[in-house]
Length: 382
Ligand code: SF4
Image (cartoon, rainbow, N blue to C red; front, side, top):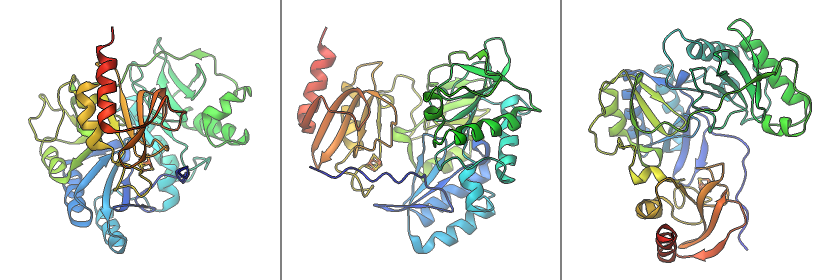
C-alpha cells in the first residue's frame, strides 16, 4: 500500500517558500489581489528570470512563481520587494491571509475592510489561530466567495446589512466599518479559545457563538464565469497556470485583480482579450476540469494530472466537474467534486464519485483509457 501524502499544515509564502519537485514555490499574497501594470510586468519578468517561467493562480487568489532555485531566492525577494509585493516579515505575511472579491469599487465596504484587515495584520493585531486560518472580504450586493475557503467572512445580508460571518454558521453579526475589524479579531480569538485551528471545526462543536450572530446570511452566487462584468473582463487559464509572457501581455491591458477562482479580472476592460493561453468562453470544456501540478512537478505526485485532465475535458458532461489529483491530498479541490481521479501510481487512478481525493474510491486502479470510456458511458447514460 502506498504511503499517505505528507500534510505540511502550512501554505507557502514568498518569505517562507515550499520546496517542490521543480524547485521552490514562491507564493505572493498580492495586497487586495490587485497588481498594477508595472507590478504585473515585473512579476512576469521575474518569473522567467528566477523561475521556470510558469505562474500559478491559487484557490486563495494568490500568485505563485514555480521552479525557483533556492540559491537565488534572496535575490528574487529583493526584486519583489522593490515592486512592493513583500511583507515586512514572515509573521505578517502568514497572518495577512485575506481573500477579496474582485468586484470591489474604490471606496466601497469591500475596499475599506480589506485595507483595514491588512493594516491589522501589519500591526500584528490578527490572532495567530493557525497557518491556514484566513479571511474573505466579500461585501458586494450578493456574496461571490462562499464556495472558496475562508474562516471569517464579511458579507452583506439580503437586506443590505454588512455582516461578520463565520464558516459553518448560517447567521452573521451586523457590523459597521467602525466595529468590523475589532469584531473579526474577537471572533478569531473565539475560534482559538475552542482549542481548534479552523472556524468550521469550532462551529461544528456546537459551542455558542459570541453575542449578536442573529442576522440570516444570504446565499451566494456560483463561481462567476469568464465574461464581461461592470468591474472589467474576467478571463481564465487552464488549471490556473499561465506562462510569464501571458501575464506580461495582460499587464498591457490594465491593472489585474486576482481571484480565488484561478481567474483574473482585467480592471475596467470593456472587451475580452484575444490572447493565446486564455479562456474567455463561459462554456469552454477546460473549465469543467481542475488538476494540481501532479508528478513530476510535485514531489508527492503519484501520477500525471494535467495532460489527462485536458484529454478528458471533452467527455465531462456539462454541469459536472472533474478533479484529477496527483495524490490523495487533493490540493486543487479541497471540497468534494462530482468526479475525482486520484493518482495512485504512474498510469493508475482511483475514481471517486461526489467526494474528495482522499475519499474511499468507487473504482480502483483505472488506466487513462478505461477512464475515458467509463466517462463516455456515463455521459451517454439516460
Ligand atoms: S495533490 Fe497534487 S499538488 Fe497536492 S501534494 Fe498531491 S500531487 Fe502534490
